[in-house]
Length: 302
Image (tube, rainbow, N blue to C red):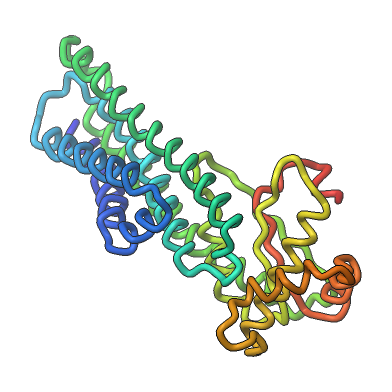
């Protein structure tokens, strides 16, 4: 019975571990300054996988309830690890404005915090197994859960996992179609709600749609909202990206001059009018904007 239960988590763990061992995951961790945490998480996933493989060979039913609960927790954290690493990989294909020193510092600090949160979650799952595995091994064998019941429960979990994978793929397709729906004219706002915990969440889904569609718009921008909210900083970030991205697309950047530097020089001129420039973009051009981190009604109303 226990062997049936632990087999649920092996495929999920294997997928997350395989991605953690890829060259792009290693390169992303190195560039973003989180290689130590990434290495620790990869090693912990290997130990979890080894434990599940060892447990799969046992036929003692004394602690199958504890194992089944732990497998569920391992599965959840494996999903978080895979999503988080995919998010970091997407950042390797960064737009020109990302390389500005202030942006790099802010993103590295945020990514470092996310990786520490993910590392803590992996540690908690590992320590929880150490605490309770020995306790359950000393407990008397219980016949309250039959093999048929455990098989049924395992099949249900497999169905949920398969549905989640299918839904994740469908989300990407539906989001792209929703953005490009020509049947609706004018300004459109699409909200993508985070429905589960985890450091990465829906960001990889939105990032994939953004990377695929940004070329179809005259200007585009990806902005992470800062707290507390600063309207001038927000509009400035939008305009900087509008300018840099549109120049990259049309080849108007002076040869040998990074687009970000050229834009900053222009925006720091004494006669520059930020609001006038912003109004010109959003009034006369087709644009795509992603707001990441929208969390309050006040920000939404603004």
